[in-house]
Length: 120
Image (cartoon, rainbow, N blue to C red):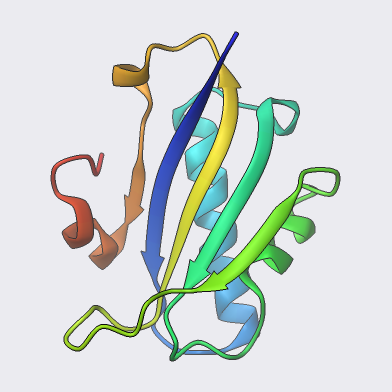
């Protein structure tokens, strides 16, 4: 079993806690499904949010999905002029037998524009 990293992002329509829970929950669920993962395969998850998001911690959405014994951390994304607003990014460390090239990185909706090279 190898340690792998999975990337992902979603752009929120608005800065509201319920909306963040919904969108981040959808992102995490899609990451797990597309990579054939369960919660036990997760090692840790890093979340970043752009500076315009204040309503909640993205990690709260993970806890609501039942990801309760996995280390989670939130940080603020760099405030770069012209960057896409209201974005939550994820970097999940996992255990997987999949080769690195077969890991499905997930960029939902308009966030797909952030990484057209790896978005699936």
